[in-house]
Image (spheres, rainbow, N blue to C red):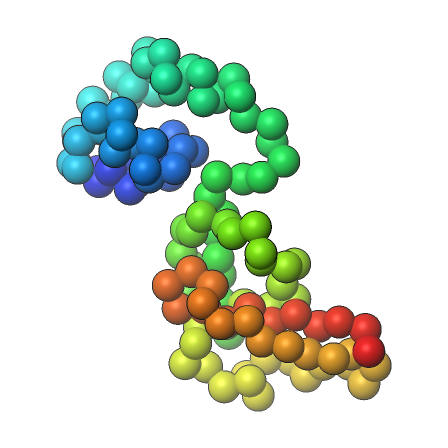
Length: 120
């Protein structure tokens, strides 16, 4: 059995869309395979409208411990130099270059801090 969230990840659609179009909270691999093999009209339309500019899901990975999580990217996210779990110390990441200003952005995914190194 897979969850609706896992189905949304594998179909590369938002979780809200999966819910709105009746994908059940749990479905079998056979049910999922049927959706993949014979996509309903709404899924075909969604795929046809995809521009490829903004991904539906991104894989976040902690640069300290390797923990990963799939998340919906936000428009306000900059390009991160590093990602770390919110409980890691800043000293656990490589130090910034002398000519770089480092800033931290909280609230990335469920537990990440985004690190952005910018030229000073």
